[in-house]
Image 1 (cartoon, rainbow, N blue to C red):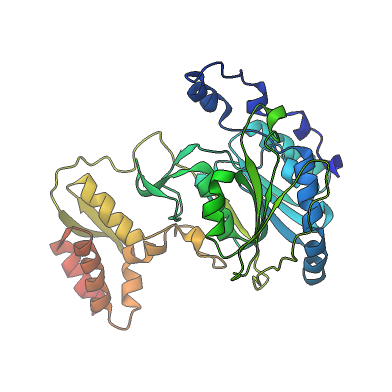
Image 2 (cartoon, rainbow, N blue to C red):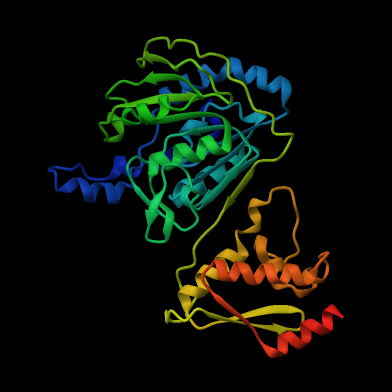
Length: 378
């Protein structure tokens, strides 16, 4: 089953190659070095796919292809035993070595794939059939691109911009896919059992990751697409023994939509807003041709108001195409022609002024814009 993985299997994990921690003070340095990268043992991945096989047969009667997603794909061990001839494989990882090797292997095997070099915190994923994850444990993630999941908290970029890596990975997978299989530390057991989608917990041996240089108690958690009133089944399994069968899992209908899989990023080379913070809330509205131009006296006010006006990036609007110059949902608020198309253009314009006020600004329409706007209305 691992025949399609060639180059990727030659990439050793950072956990395997890093020096062992000899004392407590070495643990932090080792974690920074390894980035909690420990590959899934092959026997776990093999048993995982064996448990899924009965459900896969049913899914494949309904679908031509199954979309499979891994938000910390590593060298692809979790995807090695997938029925790749019937799957679309998607994955991301912060290790460029892994992504390069996986992409070459998948291309050589003629597998439909998309592997990107990015962290899960900068990823947008939607409408997948299956997510199979073994995320890095206990890393602190910080990004302004994070989704506001239950696990996110206030970070250096504001609300919902910080999270624990394995908690964020689980929330992202549950949001992105109908069926989820997650290899997690058993400290996540209570969190998993609170989810009505949980079907089963397979407790792995304590030494499962010993070969990778890690000693942590882990378990496989299986989540279905539909909530259940019954708590998930719990099994303790071994490497050699037969694993108890998994209940048949069902896919949620996605209306034949293609999965959304996009990597964002933050350009740290220069700030987007360079206006100093002066606490002057004045926002002057001008125009350039038929585009609305806003001028600010305070950088903090500018950030608040532009976030309120632009709302979000258009990539979240699945299934709709936009002109090249439209990058945000709220870009239309900066186009005067859009106001003229409304049943009451003046009311629509006043609504934008109210958005500016609600965001903490004091809008002032310049005399030039006032005259031009009256001319357009006429």
